[in-house]
Length: 113
Image (cartoon, rainbow, N blue to C red; front, side, top):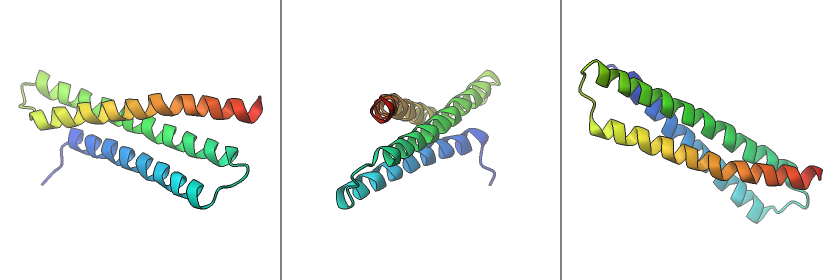
């Protein structure tokens, strides 16, 4: 059975959400059990990694929505579940980017100013 392109893109998008969540929880666990005295650099790397992964997931969501739109234009039936998953993945990834960007700016501000 061949997997459709928008389904693969949705899968990649949700994998990026999962990877971002795992990185965040690993950081929180390490911060609880091993509190470093100067963890600004580690925090900067973690936030940057989460931001990059979420932006990649957001791009996959946008590509998936374009694929679904092309299917609608060609009069191919698009299941509502696929549309819902695409929109949900996009909203979650945009939310992660919106919440992570100020944290990155604040971290850089405290490190260098």
